[in-house]
Amino acid sequence: LTLRWVPGHMDVRGNELADTEAKKAASGISSHPTRLPRILRSMLPASSSALKQHFHKTLKDQAKDSWSKSTRYARMRAIDPLLPGTSFEGLISGLTRKS
Image (cartoon, rainbow, N blue to C red; front, top):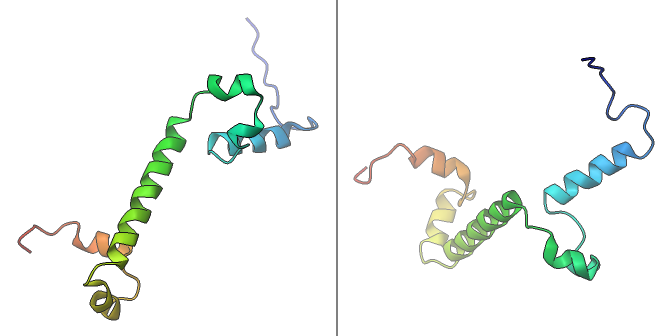
């Protein structure tokens, strides 16, 4: 058995471009499904990672929108203009409900 190391991307024309495009596709930044050939539109599975990222982003956007419409938003914004933010979540994460 002989093992040989082969450089995957070195001096191979187009390989870096292909790698960049593959990373875009894996992260969900790819062609819109309507631009794919019709047969591939239903055959390609959705990336579970991309679906989770989209879900969490949508959830955060909805929470932010709901917060900005709440009655406490203006008062809390006067105290901390960065709200809602992750710094606040970090500060209160260790507190009990009573605290």
